[in-house]
Image (cartoon, rainbow, N blue to C red; front, top):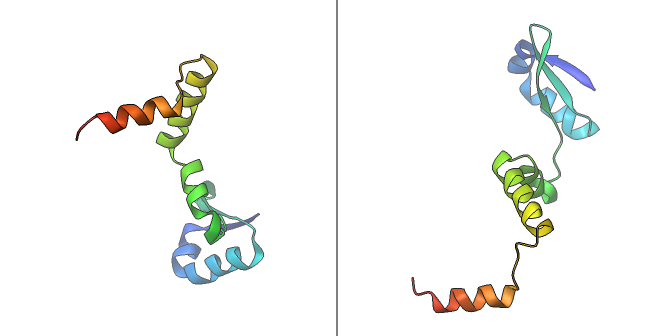
Length: 89
């Protein structure tokens, strides 16, 4: 993984981003020599999956859903759809 300082990134953002996109390898962004962020290549087709996988609220929601499933706190989808059909907005 390459490393780029914040000053270099601010002066050469296009070059750094193009290098990440072309090589497919992340670049570690540093401030005063300490790692602060990473630039990672993203495939346009996988963008939504990447965003969801890194969204804390989505991760928490998925964890809660998995716990409900494991505990048997579920019901058939048809039952839920029937309930939604009956509930006027």
